[in-house]
Amino acid sequence: MKLLVLSLSIYLTGAIVKAQDGNQEAGTTAYSLYKSKTYVKNPLDLRDPFKRRISKKKAHQHSKSHESGYYTNVNESVENKPVESLKIVGIMIGAERRAMAKISGSKAGEDSVFLIKEGMKIGPNGAEVKAILPGGIVLVEKIRNVYDQDEYLETVIPLSN
Image: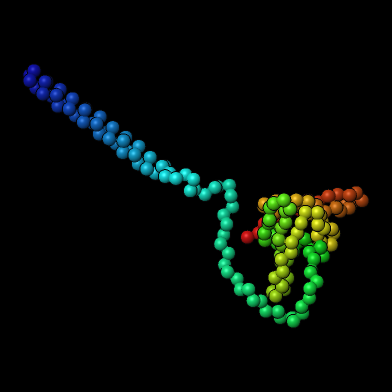
C-alpha cells in the first residue's frame, strides 16, 4: 500500500510540474504574440495623425480652348461674386496668408482661380475676410436686423476637396 501511495504521489507531482511548465510556455507565447503585433520597428516613419493627407492630383491638360474668342487683360475680381458660390480650393499659409477660390456654378469654360487676402471685401453685401485658417476662411458681414440695429454675421467657408 505504501508503494502504491508513493508511486501515485510521484506521478501526480510530475503531472503538476508538467502543467506548470505548459502554462508558462502558453504565457510566453501569448506575450511574444502580443509583442510581435505591437512592436514598431521605426516609429519616426509613421504618419502624423494630426496632419491632413495630401492627395495626389491628376495631371491636367495645359492647353485650354477658348470657346468665346474673347480675350482681355482685365482681371476679373471676386468682389462682385456672391459668397454662396465661392469654393475654397487652396490655402497658402505664411507671412501673408492667401486663399484660392473658384466660383461654383460658373460656365464650364471659365476655370479662373481668384486669390483672396485678409481684409478683402467679397460679395454684393461687402463681407470682409477676417481670417484665413488652414481649414478655411472666416467672413464677417455687417447687416441691419429687423429692429434697425447693426448686426455682424460670421461665415466660415471650409476648404473643399
